[in-house]
Amino acid sequence: MSLTHTGVTTGAAELEPCGQPDHPDCGIRDVLDRVGDKWSVLVVVELANGPRRFRELQRAIDGISQRMLTLTVRRLERDGLALRTVYPTVPAQVDYRLTETGASLTHLVKALADWSLEHRADIARSRESYDNDHPENEIR
Amino acid sequence: MSLTHTGVTTGAAELEPCGQPDHPDCGIRDVLDRVGDKWSVLVVVELANGPRRFRELQRAIDGISQRMLTLTVRRLERDGLALRTVYPTVPAQVDYRLTETGASLTHLVKALADWSLEHRADIARSRESYDNDHPENEIR
DNA sequence: CCGTATCCTTGATGATACTG
DNA sequence: CAGTATCATCAAGGATACGG
Figure (tube, rainbow over the protein chains, first blue to last red):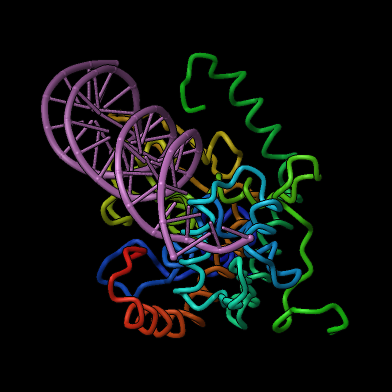
């Protein structure tokens, strides 16, 4: 790895600039706006293991309200990440499954989870240390 | 890839369950809570190209307020993702750079950006189509 | 079962003014 | 320059009730 450019602590990835409105958008905000909310990834994770009915999802995802589950699966459907299938039974029966695009997301989600597990101890230590040195601070 | 288990549309990654409080946490919410906010990744992207002073960051990241930049870099510092260095000049001069942990994040961010660029067209099409079929709907 | 319709609360963010 | 301090706003999410 080249360290000729100054200041990079260690191997960072090459990244396009991303903060300017003129510059071609790097796409990062797009993804985060789509899956950075409280529930979307959890639904994706659950659907990664196969189709699920509405109630199954709700039972699998602790704490999600009926309203938020509805909104979340609707958004996934709208974005083409999940497919909604209605069976004309009575009472109604609906299942959701990932589309190809949605399934491709799971690899990203796995990368997130792996990174988290790999670094969570370091981060916890850093926080403790920081909070120790800044007792008054309100950053959280 | 094994397709013996039913219902997986296409190659989804193997993912631990994640929504239950009893189950060992998969870590996904951890990462998203850390970088899923409006500005953190943009700061990380900028710092990926080398150390930056406070004003440099603010100029590089369009639309960020002084307050939010402060909060964002503080959080990154607290989590051990960025290092803050104060030079005792007058007026004050401060720079930020990624730590090793922070630099490791850039690879994840790159994966996010890549995924977004790869699928944004599909997603845009899907949305258009959905909105076309659901004119009244308010999902956005 | 699978939603929709309301109402309400809160946290994240923005705007602005001031300081070492 | 690099912040801190306040106040205002707004959208995400939660609670609850009702309906096909």
